[in-house]
Structures are given as C-alpha cells and as structure tokens.
Image 1: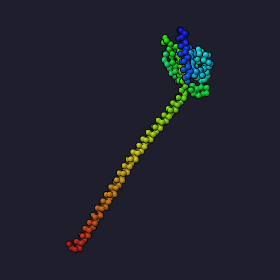
Image 2 (image 1 turned 90 degrees about the vertical axis):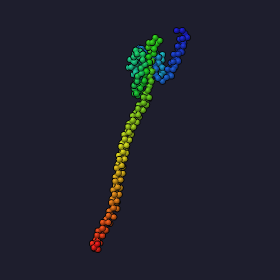
Image 3 (image 1 turned 60 degrees about the horizontal axis):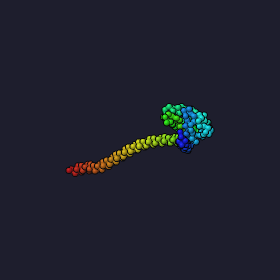
Length: 217
C-alpha cells in the first residue's frame, strides 16, 4: 500500500471513529476469537483500561463488573453464529446492574465482510431501551385498561338498551290499558244514556195502560 493511500485510509478510519464516538450506543468490534478490534467511547465506559490497553485484548476479560452478563455468557456463541451464517442478528438482553436496577439492551450483531467475501469481524451495537420498554409497557397497560373500560361500557349500553326496550313495552301496555279503560267508560256512558229514555218510555207505557183500564178505552 502506497503512503498516500495509507494516509487516506487512516484519515477515513479516524473520521469513522469520530462518528462512532459521537453515538450513544455502545459499539465494539471483535474477531472470531472475541478479541477486541475496535470500540467507541460509549462502550469504553463498561471496560477496564484505556483505549490502547483494551484493543487487541480478549473482550470478555475487559468488561467491568456492571451486571452485564451478555459478554460473558452469550457473546462467544452469537459471534460464532455470525461468522458462520454471515447474517445480522438481533437479540434482547435483560440484566440487573450494580444498583440492582433492571436494564434492557438491544444487541445487534453485524458481520463485517472482507474483500474476499469472508467475515473479518463482527460489530456489536448495544442500545439501551430500558426507558422505551417501560413506556411501551405503560402504554400496553393503559391499552388493556381502555379495552376493559370499553368492554364494560358495551355491556352497560346493552343493559341500558334492554331496559329501554322493557320500558317501551311497559309504556305501550299502559297506553293500551288506558285506551281500554277509556273505551269502557265511554261504553258505560252510552249505555247510561240509552237506559234513561228506555226507562222513561217503559214507565210511561205502564201508566198509559193504567189510564186505559180506568177510562175503559
């Protein structure tokens, strides 16, 4: 490699490192033996030693006692799978930190290919999603409460509709009863009006008959 190309490569890697250091995600790169190839500033917080001291060393031995068991228990198997399958893999990791607080991190393992198509290193991006996960859990809980309230409202509406129909039926029956009562009163009034002249005629006929007998007609 010529000197200008080498300088350009160094500048390019320096710029890339600057970008990685500006990210809040923890980013490390390891080889097949889990030796640390590169690391950004966020990931250095969980390491013992300086940048020059940790690069090239076994990654799992450099992790601080922070409760993060991923690098000790799962890293080797997942890195081996990434080398073999050449596929990006994403896992969700839960653990408790030194303060006994739950931490949830999303780990993304990305195989980095060389020019000949072989996996050269695996980059692991760790993103803390504890707060986002807790918010999602709260939203999920609120959604469940809303569904429960909605179900209860539907049941109450069904009960109210049933009660309203019963009231409508009762009202119709009462109106029918009132109509029948009115018809009965009307019929009684008509009968009374008919009975009065009939009684008058009947009584006068009897009187006329008596007059006929008295007069000998």
